Image 1 (tube, helix red, strand yellow):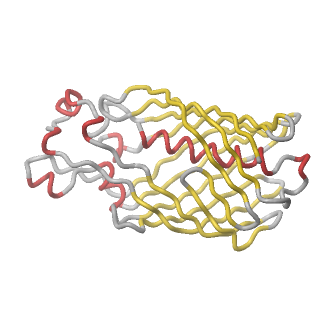
Image 2: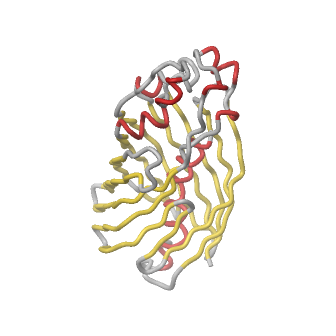
Image 3: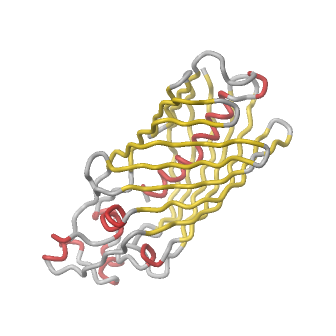
Length: 265
């Protein structure tokens, strides 16, 4: 479930930061640094064996300075930023790890896995770059991240297009994109490890995978300090992930919903 939780947070936090720091009443966002504190409720339908649907409250912390920003588990430094283009360095925790004890033993056994022979998957730290182009036709974002902790030894590339529009003070952004994971990263988080195979576990390696998604984000300032936000994301899991023995049989999609409220300082 943690994988879905973090994916939802990453999708929603930029929207909350926009609502606090880029409120049209505040001009172009070039004012003093802004902190944001808030809380969100995350609902996810986990495809992992035995996870089911979970609802969880989550605290949120954001910071937006002139060059440096911090949003939950992601931090960055903007080298270039203007009305149409932004480019910077990014550091992000990869919370895709999981504890075997958190999965359903019966469901794993149904998939041919003995939980006693399995290893936990660790979280990691990714470093990379991101670029964003904005204009009348919408927003295009590109990201390149590599595992800096050698947890999986892999890397990820992402591409997303969004078209924001405003209804009153609310900003709504439908979006679509794709994330591509290298074989090392996908094999670590969705496949079985060599030491597990040596114990008699099935040898499963998905190889590199591409995960397309569609979604929508919503952000609206409430007065001068408060903002409400929401994000809904639907992903289609490719066969390499959907066929993983760690997932429920027939689980080929995932959906994440987050709704929150935050206050700027």
